[in-house]
Length: 106
Length: 119
Image 1 (cartoon, chains in turn yellow, blue):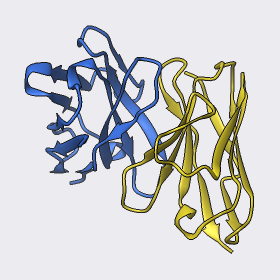
Image 2 (image 1 turned 120 degrees about the horizontal axis):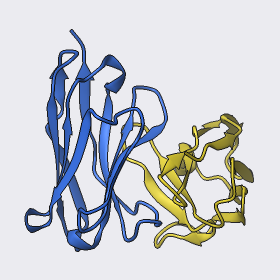
Image 3 (image 1 turned 135 degrees about the vertical axis):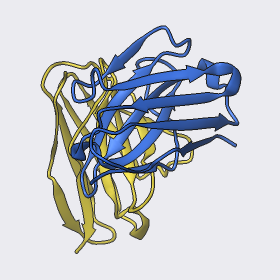
Image 4 (image 1 turned 180 degrees about the horizontal axis):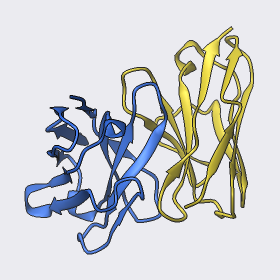
């Protein structure tokens, strides 16, 4: 199993802030890395697949980068609807998720 | 409209069994690789079980091996999870989720069904 580690576990930010979340894999996973957003009481929703490919309908303020073992999700200008929990997930082998990063309002 | 709808959750005693179902519509279910993913109350996402589009390849998380069985019926556009020897730590919302290949993301998710294991 490939362990995925996200940092930070939580963060407080204001509307308009630039936010970056990091995800590290215990071994190289090329670009088999996906990002999801989950709001309370809802199922996760895919934001970015293959490390940097934005899912259709996802605002362009979201971007992803990285390869190998280090990846990041950036929100260029945080909006009120972006306050949620974000998960990374590797699809290189049997799937595994990071522990999540909760983005809260400062 | 892509839709996955889970059913079958509920309250069950430790050691008991439960069968979850997931019905798909609005996309070519038989082309999709499907998984069950769970989320314990207040916790993160945990992948549980995977089945290939044809049903010939199956993987299970170590935490459920020998207790949970995933299956699918492409003619009925349905995915199943047979759960037995349930433990309190299996208490979670169970989501069915699908992707276009074995190494792709999960682009389709159900709304989840709650399984509570308690005496």
